[in-house]
Length: 209
Image (cartoon, rainbow, N blue to C red; front, side, top):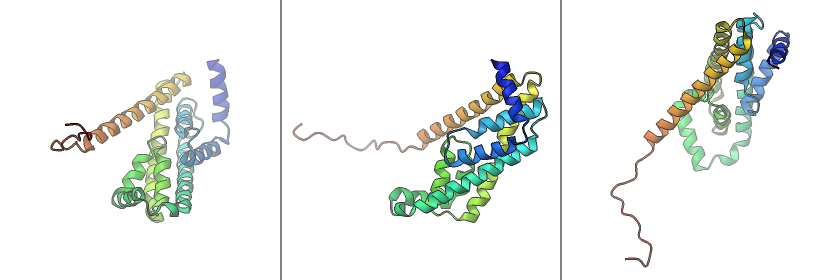
């Protein structure tokens, strides 16, 4: 069964259409996260190291280009449908947050499953300047494509004679990094959460002494 799967993957990865497929998956995943684009890029990186095909540089370029196009579609969706939310308090807060550190949010969110879609949609809703969005999103997608492809490449190089083990290693590294990011985010949220006021007296229900 494993041999059959790896043979199928090898046939897919050596196809000249693989770069278009990676780009298309990255486009869709940016605003409709159904198929994780990281998995496709990591798999391509594994085969680039173990078999020489596809070409690693073209994989990175295809993934970055697709992600950039998808993020801009998400931005435009938010911009087109965001007028009705402009007066809400949460959107006013988001507008201030993006004005202060929008670039950092765009870069960090690219590595958080589902977070990239929420952030790119919100940048459109708050009408974050398009030229700034394009600049920081460009940095985000290039770094993300490099990260995903190189994780696969490292796994493929470590198990050059067994691409399946390389794929498992690459996916394991990606899952570990994602888990660490989520743990750090949870810890930061807990530390920054305002502590309850110790001087506040508990409320006593009416009718009780």
